[in-house]
Amino acid sequence: MRSISRSAAISMVWILSSLAAAFGPEDALQYKDPRLELLKTQFDAAQQALQLAQLGIGSRAIPTFSYGQSPDPYFFGSTIPSNSYGLRFELGWTLNPSSVGQLSRTLEDLREAYLRLQRESTRSALQAHIRVWQQQLFLREAEARVGLAQARLAATRERREENQATDLDVQRAELGLEGARLNLELARSALSDAQRNAAAYGLRGTAENRTVRFATPEVDPKTTPRYLSEVANLTQAQIEARSASFSWLPTFRVGLGMSSNRDAFGIGGALSFNEGVLGVGTSLELRKPSTDPSAAVEPSWGLTLEAEINLYALIFNTSYGANARVQSQSLILQTLQAQIAADLQARRERLALHERRLALLERSQALEQEYLAQSKARYERSELTDEEYFERIADARSEIDYSFAWSEYVDAVSEYLELAGLPWALRR
Image (cartoon, rainbow, N blue to C red; front, side, top):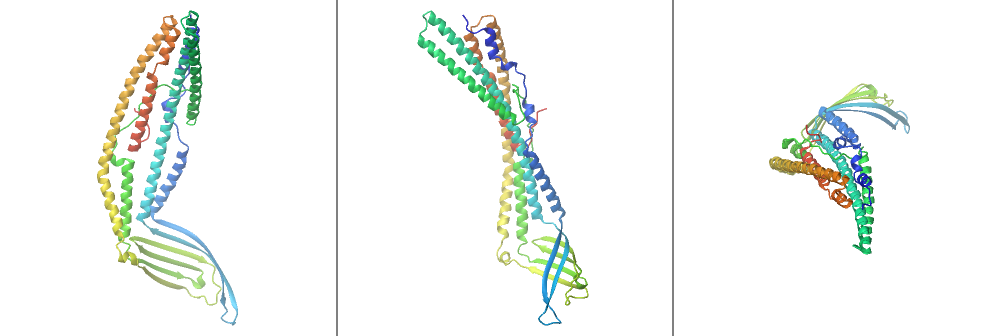
């Protein structure tokens, strides 16, 4: 009666179950995005810049060259060419809170960008594993439906020989088989695409049909990236408000310099006060001795006093807007902590529901596997027809539902980690 042998049918449907598992969720967790190294380099450079700004020390070397002509004091109408070259060294110290604040914000932004990319790339690798797993299940289902269509076609032809079916019934069964084979080709193509995508994350071969649980510890809302970002905004607003508060004060600069005979070298020092920021600097310049007859033979010195007044800031209150931003940012922080705490709690409750759903589907999958094993045994004992056996396999959906529930759980964990600012890790 049967047009398909038991051994051929079983090998066609259970071929995927005999494949050796190649990668699982733990392998996806090991993926490292190549862009992380670039962000790490940027982070190290920003950290170094912040450390230098906190020290407040700056230095530079400035080579100089000049060429010109000056009137000859002894011969009317004649000129004396003159040229000079030198090297000036400058060393200064200033502690600029605004610069330190901006660099601190840049450093925190780079740190969060690194962690965000790490989380997103891990999530993508986990989803790549899930897609391969799901396409393997869809391929198994497509193979079972081909077997089911073949069994139905064979049964229809037998009924036609017994005058219990028409040629139209046979044509419909043949069309059903053709559609099932096309769906099988599509399933194989989709699996190949999923495997190519997974290979980009270093995941090759077949996917294991199992899940894990991730660590989602409770965190203080004040340590979350969102809260820290608003704190950084408040700090920057306070620095700008402080600078604006001093903007109406004159900018003072006091300089003292001395040159040797014929300007062979010179030294100098300066003290400045600009918008509440104190700066101290010194310089040493080595020069070619001047050949100008009018150049001073003896050492000379000079004192410079400067004061710059910002009339706009003196007349108008430029700090008003900056102070308003500080007050606005303070109000945001007053309510943000409670809001983040509520969001964290809501996402943890959602995670608990996802885990309960996974546990329920694990039980359902175990029962379905037992049911399919019993069906296989009955089929081998000829207690089930080809059509009955393949129909049971094609209708098996528990593992497919389980894979989709696992995908939703991964997304929920990702959302929680994004809010909490935590990396992916297995639950211990």
